[in-house]
Image 1 (cartoon, one colour):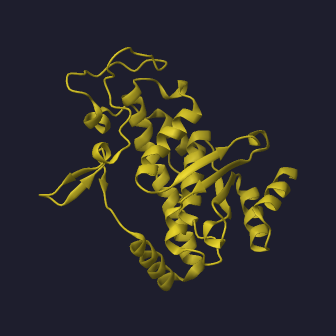
Image 2 (tube, rainbow, N blue to C red):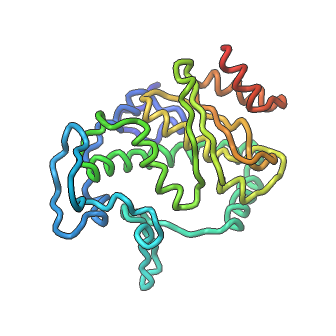
Length: 266
């Protein structure tokens, strides 16, 4: 049964195309960027394209540094980002304890599935907020924004929050294959070299974000991981059949290079 058109939560990791289309009907959310609006700047109309404006900009686009991004209220003991979202600072010990406790409760396989679905759901909700925020901040229609511009604008807050840096590869998009290289994974660097891939949360996150951007359901699997001794993590995003095949080949000991070669020949 397809997911209801207004349902952002079901199914957990494979929403229908109707659900994914909803994201592109989000309206500009001026409240989400109210902290970025310069004093005296009014709310401009949403234009077909982003227009260059000379002089001082109405919004602070370059806000990805600690003093501007993190908003601490010592009296209430709260921390927010400039979009009004509540945040929590944690260290590597927290990450290790959380993942360890989850695995103790549901087993390794169950923990991996939960982390993937958590990443997927987080990505869906984050994209919903992000697309409304982008239209307000840049006062332009989503349909006229370049995909690479959207992706970089979406990832920058995650970089300053400590989720790492990334590089995406669309060179095989005509074959239905997208690739992401992740550096300084918060999960893998916390756990260290344990001889197994661990970035299931990121895999779910990438699957949902690229599903929204492409407006069709995609999956993601990690092909190599920092936690197996590599210097960075690599992911492939594609349809469920190819993702399942990549996961199987990885379990059989195939390298990322081998997996990419096999996928390219399908």
